[in-house]
Length: 307
Ligand SMILES: *[C@@H]1O[C@H](CO)[C@@H](O)[C@H](O)[C@H]1NC(C)=O
Ligand SMILES: *[C@@H]1O[C@H](CO)[C@@H](O)[C@H](O)[C@H]1NC(C)=O
Ligand SMILES: *[C@@H]1O[C@H](CO)[C@@H](O)[C@H](O)[C@H]1NC(C)=O
Ligand SMILES: *[C@@H]1O[C@H](CO)[C@@H](O)[C@H](O)[C@H]1NC(C)=O
Ligand SMILES: *[C@@H]1O[C@H](CO)[C@@H](O)[C@H](O)[C@H]1NC(C)=O
Ligand SMILES: *[C@@H]1O[C@H](CO)[C@@H](O)[C@H](O)[C@H]1NC(C)=O
Ligand SMILES: *[C@@H]1O[C@H](CO)[C@@H](O)[C@H](O)[C@H]1NC(C)=O
Image (cartoon, rainbow, N blue to C red):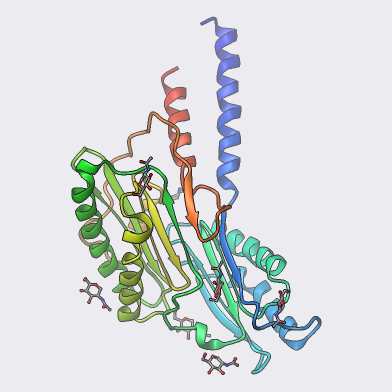
């Protein structure tokens, strides 16, 4: 290749990478639910309380990516909970909560109860303080990768996945009142690696967190049994697994929570030769892929390096 051609090719790749990075920076909205049975009028005291509370969330989010608070008195009290995925940097977490706030107000313009999930954060509000410190089972959703594990590997895959999740659930549940989060990986027989993440809102007790995550794990056979990736999201806990490393374990390792078995290793995931497959979701069906951008960026870097 001539040097001019090479430079133009290089800048083409760089622009491509930049575009990917920008796309990656946009949070993906996954799911929302508004409760249509409890509405508020506009204007009202509840609306003022809710708006004041929501506008204070992002700046009050702590270094662990969690905040819960109430504003006003019954029956006009507004209560809210915001939780970022445990590996998300604080500034990204704050902007995710800010974006969620306006998104939910737009989608649920007069509902007293709403929940919204981005891939990086969850926001939930209600006029009932019962959203604090108690396990909640709904509304939630499930997602799965449309690619399947081969029949020959399925029983071993399920065994490795169950064992990995079991260890992570113990670790996350025994976290403190600031953080209940764990990630880990395990080797599959075909020399692939399975990566998993579990998280509870840290206001849950150890046993409620364990109960919530166990119940979430029990959903896996019906949503994601033979899928190479899957996730179950509930208001107070969520779990997810993939064949690519979809979380940042630098933050996990740096976090004050103790590292036990199934801790992160430094192995980089193998870049996939093929493009990531589309993901399906239920009950919402217009959700974007959970992961995939990571793989694309890794592949682009590989192309770049091998020039
Ligand atoms: C609450 O508001 C929503 C839309 O804003 C509407 O669909 C629903 O019927 C209302 N519910 C009640 C009980 O008025
Ligand atoms: C909050 O929820 C509890 C249990 O569902 C209910 O008994 C209580 O009346 C609710 N309070 C308000 C202010 O809505
Ligand atoms: C939204 O939440 C309500 C109350 O939990 C539930 O009845 C409804 O099915 C949910 N809708 C979706 C799409 O999940
Ligand atoms: C994957 O498995 C599901 C459920 O068993 C099945 O419905 C689907 O057709 C399979 N997909 C492929 C591509 O084999
Ligand atoms: C928010 O959660 C923490 C536990 O992480 C709890 O100590 C605190 O009381 C909660 N705040 C409210 C308003 O319930
Ligand atoms: C969750 O499941 C594990 C493993 O089956 C079990 O040891 C634990 O007691 C369960 N937690 C709760 C709260 O039931
Ligand atoms: C991963 O976490 C580390 C340490 O917190 C941070 O420096 C790095 O920028 C993070 N990477 C991504 C892709 O978020």
